[in-house]
Length: 176
Image 1 (cartoon, rainbow, N blue to C red):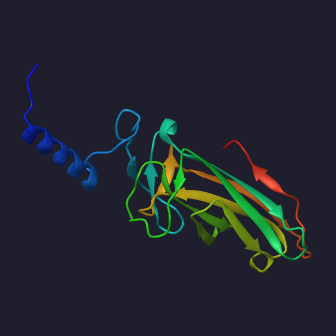
Image 2: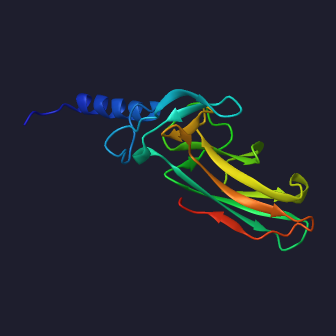
């Protein structure tokens, strides 16, 4: 077994620290290697954001639940559930990272909010009388849409506004 001099051990320790500090090395389980971020395909959503195709086995999942507030006329509590996905904080660099990004909440195809947490308050003044579709869609931080087989990773719940703003809770499962 070769012997190591104190200078060589110090140099190795210094190099290890430099790699960790600069991010060229990391700790923890990476699942056997880096996960790929898929491929941007020639398809966009209604706002022009390109789709980022990933295999189904690597895809995140999302679900949505909508419940009316106990106070009629106050609005709805919206909760999203994600699996194999982490919501990035505001200010995250615009770069696609496997399993990370934000959720976009839309009402009847009209964007309402960019979600970086799982809870959202939908006020009654944002919803007209009638039945509506509330959709949550997952995006990478570079504003590409996570997609599987050319379809966005999303979930939709129906929301009915009666004017008195009472609606029955709806949930979309088949996701987390």
